[in-house]
Length: 92
Image 1 (tube, rainbow, N blue to C red):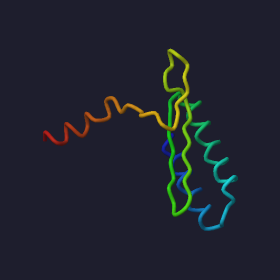
Image 2 (spheres, rainbow, N blue to C red):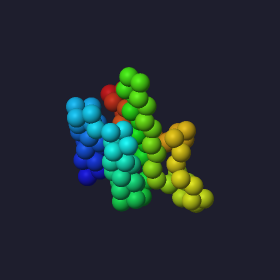
Image 3 (spheres, helix red, strand yellow):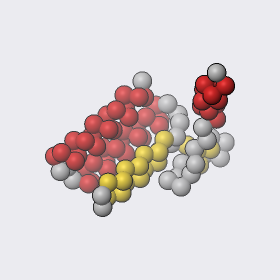
Image 4 (cartoon, rainbow, N blue to C red):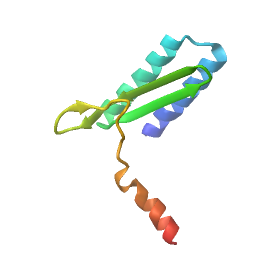
């Protein structure tokens, strides 16, 4: 289900470029999507957009649930078991 939110973020990015949406409106929309997804799925997400002379980076969610620390833009999110599929594909 959360894949839909990332598609929405991509479409919003294209719309912002095509309609010359204000940077503030664009950033607020992305932040709202990210905050909703991170609270709904109780996980951390990072978003970055580099485009010509514009850079926007935003992180949302909890990085360490034990300590209650929020994710920062500079944090590396561990991939954990996601790499097993790539390893299995390489072995086959």
